Amino acid sequence: MSGKLLIFSAPSGAGKTTIVKRILEKLSHQVSFSISASTREPRVNEVDGKDYYFISKEDFLHRVAKHEFVEFEEVYAGTFYGTLRAEVERIWNEGKHVIFDIDVIGGLRLKSKFPEQSLAIFVNPPSLEVLKERLAGRGTDSPEKLQERFAKAELELSYANQFDVILENNRLEEACAEAERLVKAFIEE
Ligand code: 5GP
Image (tube, rainbow, N blue to C red):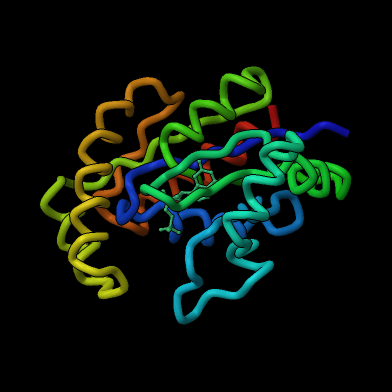
């Protein structure tokens, strides 16, 4: 079967990963996470094949040449992220819908490839200042990387109105509940 695509995009630090994880807990029998391929280094708590398929740049570009990606992006200079066609098909073949935690450009690209089947949600952080505090508070990125993430976040905020829904993330609990409601309504359509 060909299921639906539940696309969550936002600047990094807006809280989308937490929201996506919550939906996965609540709707695990209907929805499964699209594990992206990435060329970045795993963070301390990340597991290969669970959070990402961590692959070399050489392997990534080889797969690009073989048209294995539904979409891919050089999200940060020299660092690639992409959604493998085989990953989406694996989940659909399990009879589930696919949920994506993906950057804004990638999210819009997916939506344009599967317009009827997609619900594209933009997670809006309370403000750019809060976003910057959250990113810095993670303590996982170098000052240069942080600067790059801030700059990208500002650009990404300008794409919000191209999404089906803008989900305000002022209070995480409320945002999670609203996301769950939106997803349930869309997959039951
Ligand atoms: P992080 O390095 O913080 O895990 O992710 C950086 C950004 O890349 C986030 O906005 C994340 O959602 C995005 N991302 C993760 N996987 C993909 C993907 O497969 N394609 C695209 N275009 N972006 C992705």
